[in-house]
Image (cartoon, rainbow, N blue to C red):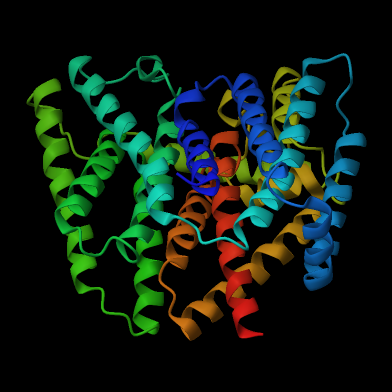
Length: 422
């Protein structure tokens, strides 16, 4: 085995460990994942000529590099000027969120520097995500059946805590595999059906509205761009539809086993769904209100949680909006509001300039060069962003890890196409 292949396998092994080092304890998870990202960064540093590669990238991508540097400065300023006090718990939370954000930026940079001049082994990459995902999903389904459901906190799951966190993981796993389905794994029909059925069954068992909607919205968008690109995807579409309905059937059988026969079972997670939907809207209103308190550089990374808990304990109200326990969350369940509250207009504008630019270039190259393996990372980003509009998919360190990984792979592939053009 060559040294390059050995190093790649080590890198993919570290990626595969993400699911199993997450436990739902936010600060501890951030620390563990920061440590993992630093290990990967230092490993890559030992394999590349960092100074030479950096000079080359700065020269070829001057505008993007300047925006990224300004973003780092902006987030640092948001951290320094945050209204949180040093001697409060809030400062520890603020500091760990800031460190995670900066680590994510350098994680992206080093992954990009490593992948941009190398042929990515997608077979190994897929295995590093799908094998742990399958192991986790089968385990949770087994626990769901044996325990006759899961508690609200999901302590039985071990690796993750909370239904929503597992739902966000499933969104990523399904979106990632949908990208694979339409790129490198077309011939493996039965395998695709089994894997998607396992993931979607878990999503239905957890009854996550955000998860199901994000999956459907992601695949609807994928179908549109495939149709516009004149791709033939009838077989893949049939696999997805079959796996979805098969998952519903399996989930109903499981529900019949563990729930009373007279209980309505499909999508019956709560009789107060509309009430909770209004709570979500009020949460977004609250986020907009506190954004106006620090509009330019925000309240610092993690600042939404600090403001929400402080306002709750102070029994604060904004007009007819009383801050109750329903509005005290670590994030506003919408990544756009989260960004503007924590980074302000300046940081949010900078990161959105980069993301919009990346989206335009990705679609342009996909339509022009018809390179389907761009879908693996591209669909993953779309899936997490879709779920992030109604939940914290771009908040927790586990999902930002996958998001940044997908961004770096997509950017490295676009860089190869651009070099080939020139």
